[in-house]
Length: 503
Image (tube, rainbow, N blue to C red; front, side, top):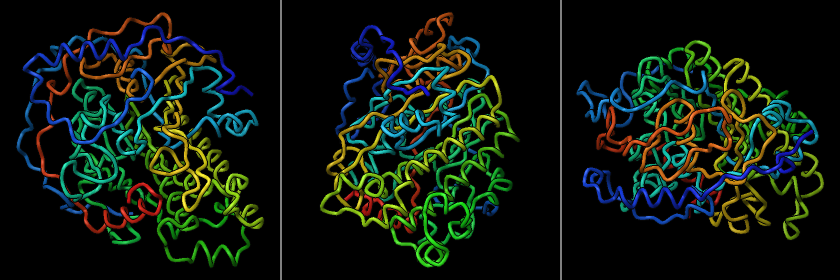
């Protein structure tokens, strides 16, 4: 079985980050771009690379109105071309790392991902430091650094007292699904970080925000129903809401694959136990049901409404990697080594979760159909911290963990170079420009990333001339009040403290 790191590297040519910075310096002289918004107040490094229930009538946050949104340059005046691929599927996996994928690929335990690796292009995806998921996933979605897109981390509004966790109203740049909507390209997005409240898109598109799957928030506030802010269009929740599975509905047979406990222990410690934030057993049933619900909703929505670009985000790999690493590699935690019995019970949780996600990948590939181009991406890698309570981590926020460990990138299918091939260089900033290129839409001059041309089919067209900025094209992102969800956010913040993300 092929391993990502055994594939021959493909050079990426000239250092594109320098070229982008020169272009941006020139653009900064143009007064038309001065009003794009404040730069924020946090610093981050771009790294060494180039770049179930029906909705209620009202929901938290500002009420939607019939006031027409502000409109900029007509998208029909922008130079585009036909799509280079018929359909695109983006599978977003929080925290996936080649350090664990490679041995699992070699052992044959990830057949669906292996098929993509063998016929496509792979890369170690360079990421940002601080390595915080909301900021990085928003960088992937927008092509901008956190200081520009406005989502700096887990702790709310920059330059102000924390009022809420990051959400879509804080984002100051368009996500790729908003850009595509302006050009009439249909996108279906399920579960992306900080996508709540769901913004309106074009006809034929849909967005299921990250707050729809049953999350830890419900452990504190026990939300009885979903709301009209949770998805677009809101009536989508009529069919998808009942697919969300609660943690207490987890099937014991499913759990035994990961947690090797007898029936009485499972009932006492997992199924019947009260939720405690940051505790590895309760966290498992929450994250397992969240990912399971996300996949169920994605398959149902995509089957009912085929789109040009399908996007599904799963959080489970990140959570289990934080909490179960010391059971998988106890030798790395000598002062706090897990007892032998616990190693047997929980030592396979992380690799088995990767196998579970590979199964989800197979299910989703069946749903989107043959002939779909696929991008698998993670925001960062993972590694052991050597200490508890968070035994796995990434970056300085989890002391002892590797700093800004590279994430995962796999591209395969029509429009992609025939593999197996390995890119020499790729960065989280490159995903949005590459995705837009595949859909026949030019990237913005203000995007730092580059199109990963060396990953694309050799007979494909060159990159389109870039537009000045997509922030000036089509429907503009207006200044809006930031909605809050105090009870839910309070619970989520406690969990993030338990995981070591915030103090």
